[in-house]
Length: 90
Length: 366
Image 1: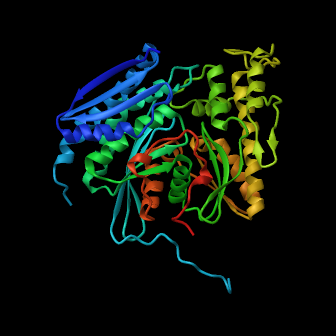
Image 2 (image 1 turned 30 degrees about the vertical axis):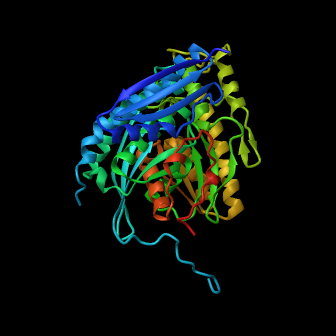
């Protein structure tokens, strides 16, 4: 039985940001839990995600969905990251 | 009343101001709002920002495109809410987001932002039930003490009454929501979706002169709307249906889109008034609180007001800032929940399309 395995490596500015992205994405299970296996790991400052699917079509759909979501997370970190680093003021 | 236990409210007056950010995106409205609970027990709306995904006439909004809209606008709306409130993210006590009910992909888009902000700024997350958000904001804005709540929107139609830490559903739609019925009819007659199809139906209905026969389907405490939608859509194929300009002085036997809008509103609103009155009679309440997008409709408010007055009661309603989906209601319900010790762990910060109003433990009320 053929299985398609594809990985995406996304570099972040810091390991902390990569960890944040991992924690945010891993909350939601894949919509097709039986057709898609996902692993998320942080290597250095990178987020590495690997999808194993039965068909190439499912791999494409899954990765497209993932990229849309991770893009939102990245933009959120980009928009608010600096403010987050600053000390809180009362 | 002699012999009656006066238990104090479980929600204590805060020892310091509390601040919450609320994020909402269960349908086509994306909202962010910041609320403050003050030491004197009062509540202040610091900001309430919203951006609506409006589709062309004749089209509804689909999950994929709506989610895309929310992803596009989320950061702008959140930044604007923060700026308008004049606070910093660091000042917040918690970040509240809509856990459900609603459309899956749009809900998830907003949850992603909430989770990211939660981890960036180390703030607890609070998942909120959308319906409870509407109710709590309605209570806060109007000051209604213990009303029967009519929650009517594009996605929900419920008659709710509070009892023992639960918002109990007394009656509801058996099929589609009343807002959905109105919106889908607006699509069929090609009304604009700007600012909302419901608003345009309301304006069109004011020009209606003729009440066409439609089914009237109350089923005990519940209502059914899908048959009425089919029926009113059927009139478009009627040979008397006439869209476009006609000579108003000629007394032709015609049915205009305005007549259909008018007939549809009168019928479904009368049904809503009936099931609300049933609930009022059942629990002996004199107050009605209308929440949800359809609550903006002035004709519905008027009809409800007539019924309430006949019973010696009154109707409470909010304006479009609060009755249409918004972020501040999520902040309000979320902060009340948070102050009672409720938090949503990251691993549980999912979204769900089905989330019953009565599943929520209303810890902040007696």
